[in-house]
Length: 565
Image 1: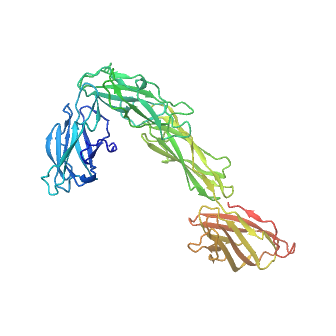
Image 2: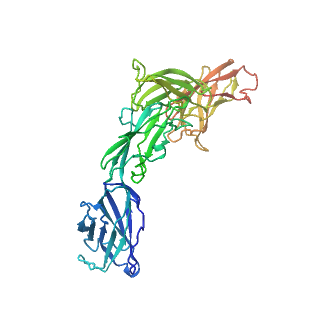
Image 3: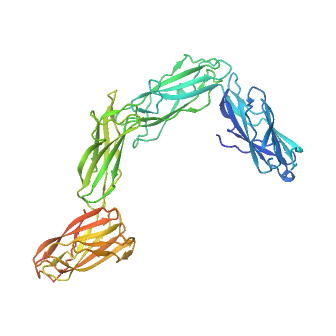
């Protein structure tokens, strides 16, 4: 419904009585001859000064009698009654003072009209609208104080031709999508609603063809969305398209889209138009717009789960293929390419879903069918904070036509290689040292908050039970509340609410009453577990030097660093 237009007409100034009239649909709305249309007229009492106490208790609407009529189904609004009716005049009256239109208020009157037919386009208005005022608070009956009449209010434009548009396949079946490179029809049906024969009817837009508008959804970066159409010659039925009153004919256009590499069509297209006779005196509503036609290649999308992964952790890449064309696509071959230098190795793939695949290869069902391929990868290198992704596409053959079909290349979301860069301080000690304190420190570059740290003790080391932790639970806030359990491994556990935040740091200390008595490289295993129970394991070598090679329990100024991993 068209928006309201305020203060269109003001009654003749008589004292300070006035009202405004608002028509819905909007003034000048195009209508087809012979149609039945519901109009709403909002009457607002705008009295001022000494007349503000007067209310409108009666409204009369009249037509000029040229052929458009009021329908007998026109009814009074709530609180009012219809007191008089003819095909050219209808009167309503309030059933009480309370229901009359007070100053500053309004009442909506819905008028049903049947549009006339004539030989050519014509503009129409009402003959007049009359309001009557009263101050009788006990009515009805009401004592009339005055009447105000507005001449020729409202307006609409009658069009002699009715037209519809439909998009079909080449066999005249309605469609909403077509493969790039495919053909389709636009069929315009025209009915002569006037009282005279209309000759040589054509599409009135430039080139006597509908206007095509290309839009979303895009299938990729520029130049998309893209739909390339030919310029078809209209086919008239009958030819020429000359219609007697009440007769119907068609104008048909056959369009072809482009599948040319490297940028086959992909996007949507709508058509708008109007029709006219040879002189332009009889037209349809302008514009008339079609529904949207989806022109596409098969589409591919990539998803990754999870998007944050640790060293040694598996993750799944899924390619979803969508085919919204009428024909299935068979013998589909997917291609997936990781980013250059991605620290990953293929663990399992390519796996079609459903599995096993149909005998002649994956067949995405027609009409918005989907089909999935999955790959399983494992992170096998890199450092915490590395990011990577995938690109992918697929190709196949259109069933029935044998036409090669390929998706555009699509890009996955970014995957983050998470981890915890950990140091041991000091990085070495002397054989046979006693009361040796080691501190494991790291920053949380993981996927979630950290809830536990496990330290496995190698042979030859004896932990005396002395442990300490300092953990960042919020930015700049450190706690010493983590508990310790076990003897080997020794596990630090966070109380609920005291987990290490992402980006936070922590240190975990153990005091050993004895270390190996001979030089060796010991290996501590550190396991960090986040709140989703994903774990990161790191084997950290530690040097035990010969006794007295430097000072006892010497602390080297260099730090041993090892990435998780």
